[in-house]
Length: 91
Image (cartoon, rainbow, N blue to C red; front, side):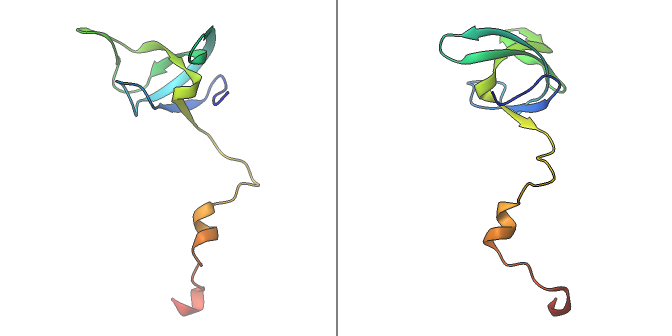
């Protein structure tokens, strides 16, 4: 799974409501197509549930969430590996 309970995440890959910042609250059922689902709460714009109906809460597939969390102390920035960092004395 992409997320764990308590994560902040960004919604991706859906027809609507992409790029919303959400709080991942709790697991829900497993969908036959999308897999594990989460109850999420939008921290900004509400979700479009139906035409004319908007809500701060939604059931969202884990596969369409991108968590935002500290990657850990051993994380490597790929950009720094691709490009040479200039030395301080040459800048």
